View 1 (cartoon, rainbow, N blue to C red):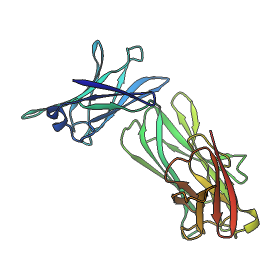
View 2 (cartoon, helix red, strand yellow; view 1 turned 60 degrees about the vertical axis):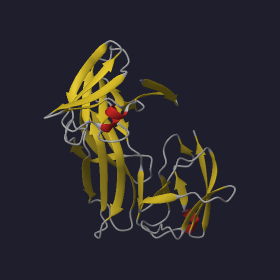
View 3 (cartoon, one colour; view 1 turned 30 degrees about the horizontal axis):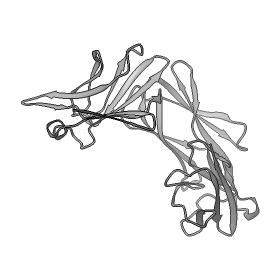
View 4 (cartoon, one colour; view 1 turned 90 degrees about the vertical axis):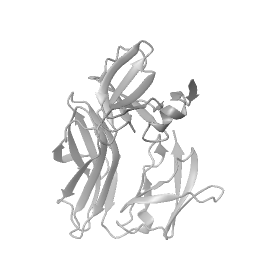
Length: 291
């Protein structure tokens, strides 16, 4: 029996039955994420049976197949001209055949890179250590590290080649040796794919100057779209703590958050559109969240 549910415009198809679910590695079943770029269409499948053959199908039958790795992940290319993919299955033919047909489709994402984090910290020598992680990379050529002293004009200070096509977690690190004690800088990643398409990461702010209570401000403000990381400008790196930072809505209800860097924090859940109050040390700031 097949149940079809539509949630927030995302088609979620779940196969039911104890026999099928019992053979899936997790109770959630297979997770299929449609992906696309200028070179074609792909289906990223996670939580498959390790080393199994993963098949994606439409109403006319199997469209394409791939092999899951030891972690149960596969990226399967398929023609964009095919009808919508409607089902996913994972089959491992060992001493006994194991099959998982329980699946869910996640919203489509754009390739070539899924950046899961981008952080900065100061080491003991006052060098900025930039770190970022990718969940997958397809047709990615390189990352350029860009720096600015005013948050407006950026220049490229280094370039790191991609690790190659991957659907596993990849980690990158870059030590920025031109940052000195007392400096202020903004950093971002410029990602370039093999077709010369360019995308930018969020901006990270680092301040090693003495704090200026009168000059403390929030960046970006307003906070637009799906972005959630908030930078505190004018505050010396590392002076943010859970003891001196508070976020609340206009009714006074506290908003839970986590500190993500020497000068940054982000709410634990997405903020609704509106006005919020940020209190840091003895400074009270207004944060606006809008689409």
